[in-house]
Image (tube, rainbow, N blue to C red; front, side, top):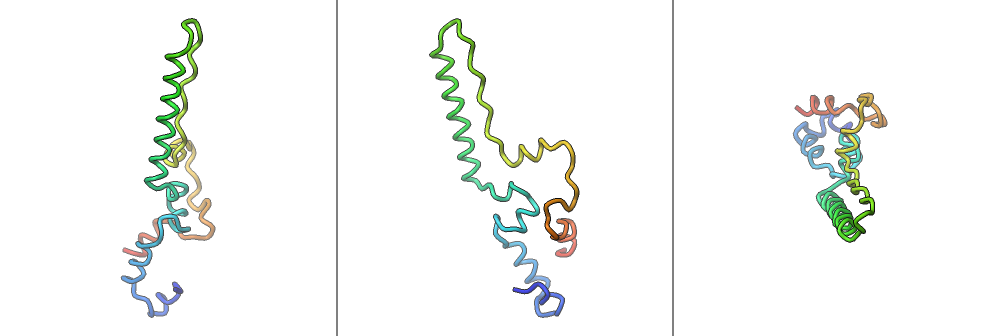
Length: 113
């Protein structure tokens, strides 16, 4: 599919909008819009949650079975999720950082509406 077909009049705006809406979740366009969060599906989030729960369970087991005078082990830190990484960034990234020549998301939305 050549996107120049839209400019040539061989591809309707409606068809182009449908094609863009149905791009794969883990494709380059979604990755450019959402970063690493685009590659994390429900299964990935559930596995990360299970790992966190297992680490907490192991921590509880260690705390209960340690000696009375022993220092408690440190509470496990949860796995980093893409949303955590986005929230941890204190400085906003430049608008075009990491987009490799792709248009800004606002431009795409303005184009499709």
